[in-house]
Amino acid sequence: MIQAFHDLTAELLAVLEDMTFAERQDKIESIIELIDRRECILVQIKPPFTDAEQQLGRRTMVLNQQIDSLMKLQKQEIQRDILEINKKKKSSNKYMNPYESLSIDGMFYDKRN
Image (spheres, rainbow, N blue to C red):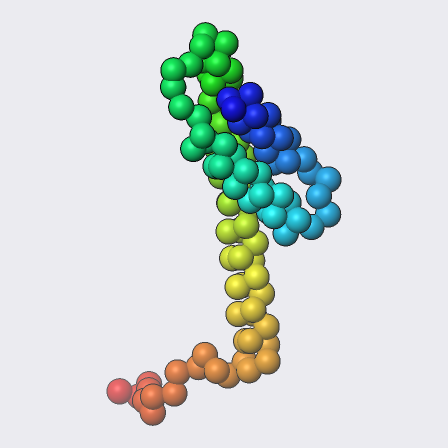
């Protein structure tokens, strides 16, 4: 079980490092599928562990740290794209209705006083 978990972890790391995905959605779906498969295996792993299994577990933990950092980068990239889309949307709305943001409150400023 630990070997299968390690193999899925290595595969997940490879998917996260792979920049050849044409569509981000495809990459995200692959990531979700691998995480789900890892979760199913993780609940089946029970102690006691042999020395070889403990070493494999340590290597898996190192891979997991790399996965965490790559997942954070992926999240930041998605957040940046969302902010960019919102800016474009706001800019497009201002272009379509340029007078919408003007405040009309009926005040008049007389500079003679």
